[in-house]
Length: 491
Image 1: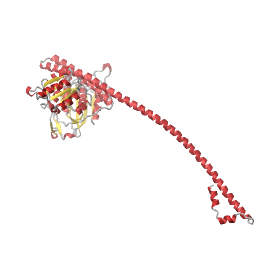
Image 2: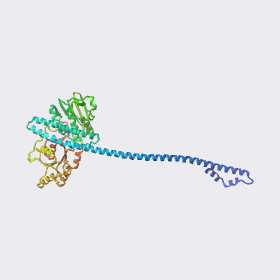
Image 3: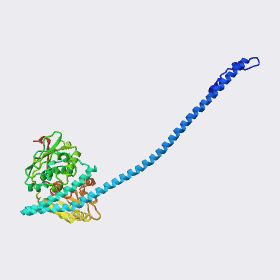
Image 4: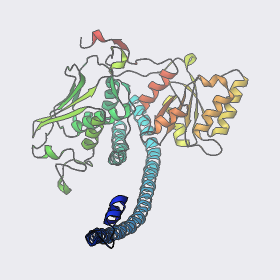
């Protein structure tokens, strides 16, 4: 159409005059008619093409608009579905968090309710055993060993159940520090001494100076404890040897026994939870099948490795590699002296210790544990503790150390009591305040130390470990490991 119009508008005026039909120019009339017809035809053709093109693009536009509207509807549906899924996921996440909190609360409650009486059983039995040993009552001493062995076994199994639950939930956190393997091994051997004596087994630890291991002390105790316990359990005659092969990049511990060994086919299954070589009512050895799976997981969390070589009837060698704590500037630990006598201290040097404990059994146990080491005063709750401390302060007397139970009745918890004491008496801001509790799950210690306690004593209380801490914090300890220069390492 535009083309036709342009044809008309582009005709010069003179030419238009020439071709305008007149009475004497019939040819001009025909030429004029031809041009007009051509222009009109072009206009009509252009118009028709325009209409056809317009209809085509209009139809396409409608199609795309319909598709867009349908997509919008789909998007709205998807948004609704996503909102529903988000709400469902939030509900699942909330339920998961609630279940995890309930599980942790259940484990913490079970731990507390079992550890508290277990602390009394193990504690008083060890005291009776000690008295029986002094009076040469062999039968009583032997019976006490049976009770202690059962107590340690029950405590170990409780800890394994709790720990495997935490590992499976990825809730195991390490709190790394320099650790003395000689001290850890001494405590482990003490706990297994009854079974060692009963089986008449010898256990030897290579007397070499060791660098500190970079690890979590509680978990290192569990790692080495599980391996040594297995070695003692599955060895009926012969000996157990613990050595430290040289390794420039890490500390290697090799625990070798002359026990029953492990079948080659079972070695591939040894790290699976609850897996045991002997099963059913015919199995020869008790156990839950959790020790090695937990051990392997904990070692790997320490960036270490474990390897087991064994032959049926020939014994087993477990090799563990752990990272060295290089931040200690080349210092290493000496072996501890065997059978260190904790002994007594002359009365004039006895430290004064205030024990805040509401459970009568545990209070008497602490008094019995410390009777030859300290002058002990007992308070049943926070109110009585504050009264006693005030009475001592009025006489210008102060305790050398406070040992406070976390779960106290009445107004004060162990944590709030500790903070109140530090707030009222400036002197106690520099005095060691230890907490004792049956809440011995991993992470409890760190939380309590962050609140301001100097150290942490878990139940059931290990008497030897407690006395070492008491002596250390009262600055009258004896027989502790010392640091020496790394040049002496391996000499």
